Image (cartoon, rainbow over all chains, first blue to last red; front, side, top):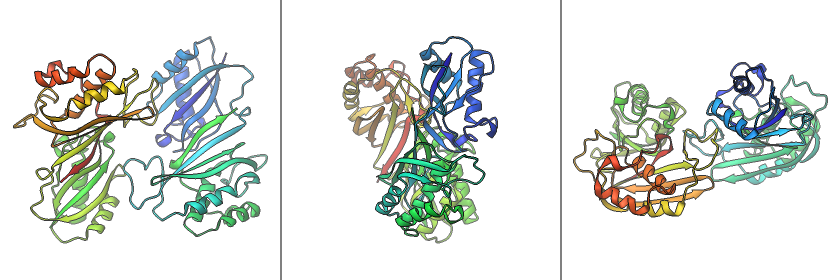
Length: 243
Length: 243
């Protein structure tokens, strides 16, 4: 019997989603809770891997339960067993053919930039503090350059092993909420560090150190060495996985 | 040379404002940063004492510096020396007669209630999770009963040593922002645990277990034993101290 769970987590205290990142991974915590609940070792499969410090408001994972279980009770039981910074938002029984990763049609991420002179005692785990004045309009022009099908070879971390570095971006835009600038991007899938590399480049546009046209050039040149430093992980949230 | 600093802090990892609460108090951290900066022991005086787990967006404290210092540089230096969950929002030179506590005309607090069925992986350090449906209108009627001059003897913790338990409340109201209910209260001053006791009682009104009229009765009776349990500290924020 397969279940799909939708998860929210504050990644600040974890080494990332995947088990290989060690005992402090989100996956390890979820597997530990499931193992406690069912009395046998259970493996979960996530829709996407989030890095150390990256958060989720709608990560999706699936696992096979060794015995029947009511979905609403599963949600309650897991929330009772998981640490306070990992929460189950939804649990549902799904067909055994469901594959959390391969069946996903798109993923939505958000990146939060705190754009003010002084640091915040509250937002430092959930936003990137950028003290320089940022030009929102230029950042939105830069964001638009990512929409469509592109080879993102330059916007990723080295060591990624992907068959192709071509991805389709459906939506890419910034909005401002007071001192917070929020970038929202939806794509078929993302390469490792892709959103953070995109944000790093767009913030350089916002600072006036790169033009919006420069983004199209960086995509075309496919040379990582030309792309500005990636934005730090604490501003990144996996918002939704769409099926 | 006296300075007034306006502070923001996430109280989740601290034992409260005052030094007596131990080395993990906010006051101890600020005094340690000042002592490092000036090379001699410096005592700060806060406008109000916040308990363990209580946050501030506008705590005010004052101290006497042993030598002249530029206020803008003081802000930058302190922010560099303090931990990331304590930030200086403002620093200004003030007259030696300024007394952060006695000169305050009023204090503004906010209390955040997360009113939803499921727990949140993000808000658990900054809001009280109340799963029961709450009647906003009844809670606002209850809040109105606190406005004016009242004896708050029933709405405080035992062991408070205050000359009088009479306080004047200028403003007391709830607003809703999605699943978050925010209570804002301004008064001349507050007794220990007073806001949390008031919120605990108003949430009972929201649950339908107490009527708005019951609040006036609780004030009149001045009996702590009749007042419902105080709300937990994590939802409370000292927002502003007015002079």
